[in-house]
Image 1 (cartoon, rainbow, N blue to C red):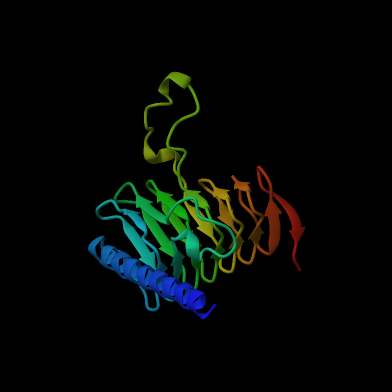
Image 2: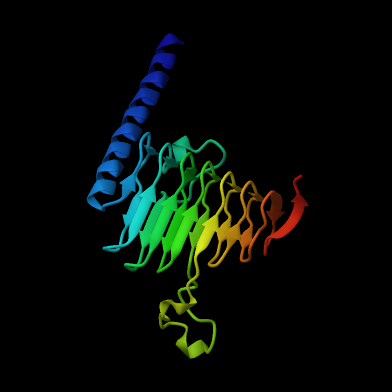
Amino acid sequence: MKIQYLKYFSIITLQEGIFTLTGLISKLNFKLKSIKYGTQLNIIGGVILDIYPESRVIIEDNVTIISNAKRCSASTLYSKTKIKTLSPSSAIVIGEGTGLNGTSITSRSKKIIIGKNCMIAPNTIITDSDFHIPWPPENRSVYPGCERDVDVIIGNNCWIGMNTIILKGVNIGENSVIGAGSIVNKDIPPNCLAAGNPAQIIKQYK
C-alpha cells in the first residue's frame, strides 16, 4: 500500500513539475510576443498565442490561465487557452484577478475587454467578428472588411459558465452570471442571471 501511495505522489509531483515548466515557457512566449502582463500571473499548461504585430494584449495582475485538462476541476478542456489577434487595431485586455480555463479569445480588429475578478469557465469562446457575411451566399467565403466587427466588453465580477459563446458587440454588465452552454448575442445588464440560446435574462439580482 505504501509503495502505491509513493508511486501516486511521485506521478503527481512529476505532473506539477511539467505544469510549472510549461507555464514558464508560456511566460517566455508572452514576452517574445510583446504581451504585457502583471505580477502573479499563474499559467498551467501551454497557451496558444497568435499575435498580430502592433496589436495589444494586456494581462493585469493575479490572472490565472488554466490550459491543461488535468488541472481543470469543474469539467474538461477541449483545447488549450488561445489568444489571437488579427490586425494592428486588435486589442485584448484581461482584468486583474480573472481566471481563464481553455478559453478562446479572438480579436479580429476591435477591443475585447474582460473585467476584474471574472470567472471564465471551461471552453468559453469570445470573438469580435462574424468573419464572414451571411448574404449573398456566393460571397460567404470572402472575408469582409472590418466595418462589421464590434467591441466585446465583460464587466467586473462576471461568471461565464462552461461552453459559452460570446459573440461580437456584446456588453455583459458587472456581477452578472451567464449559464453554461449559452450563446450570448446581445447585451446583458448588470447583476443578473442569463442563459440559453440566445441568452435571455432569467433572474435579476437585487
